[in-house]
Image (cartoon, rainbow, N blue to C red; front, top):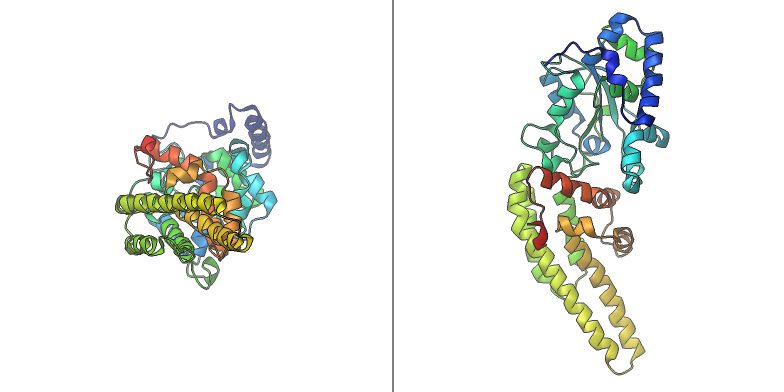
Length: 377
């Protein structure tokens, strides 16, 4: 509920580094803004349509949904983010997720973003950012529920998750300053409003892409299966069933439930074939000397093992989250012609990078990972 909380109190942080940053920001605001503008701070927020939503042609959809919920886009831009801006926007997240931070520049190099300053009624929430975050849902789209924007629009993972939103009025101000001048923000706090043409071509690419995770994974796995000699038809048959489910474009929970058994079957089959090939390799290595034959066998074996490992991991969320050498597997997959498009690389690589956090998010809300590993059922 609305508490009448002092807007400047949002600038206090328990973390020492964060508190230093926000204390300086508070001082700047007090020096430049009048009391009326400061009072309006809880009624603005910052949001940013992310590259995946832009590439999918969803930017107008996101904006329309915001407007339907009573949010108004007061300022906006369409631009490619620079590395400095990524670091500045996510400066505190970077410290928390330092091990997987490398994926952020890779994701944001894909396409433009649409940063926005939003205004609106708090509708009983403590501030507009709180209401906005309730609307978009949790960071991991699959951990959300119907009605959440990230869930409904089927973000691929924790990074390719449609939209970024600020946590509170102070973070909204700090993050908005990455893209807009203080003068522009103060104008919004004074009631300034920039008319928005959501039909403008600048909000969508010429050819939107389908970046839904399971569709992209199916595409990659089909390429991998084409390189198999052993078990190829069995794998392709399972992947055809997977494709049928994906093309239905079901809501996330229904899709996960429908995919559960087929993904387990794909993962188990790929693992079984991979072990059979490794056993065959031992037999081949111990057979009478024939360098030429063994070179040929090794080349075919390496291609099959890479293909099968990719199929196995992209069918099993828990296995993917535990796999340590995906960087090398990715490069081998690219070299083998399994991963041929930039968007395939980014979706696969980013999903692996944040998979441990995604698994934790799913389990926190009582949702099962798609896996054959007994310990996670």
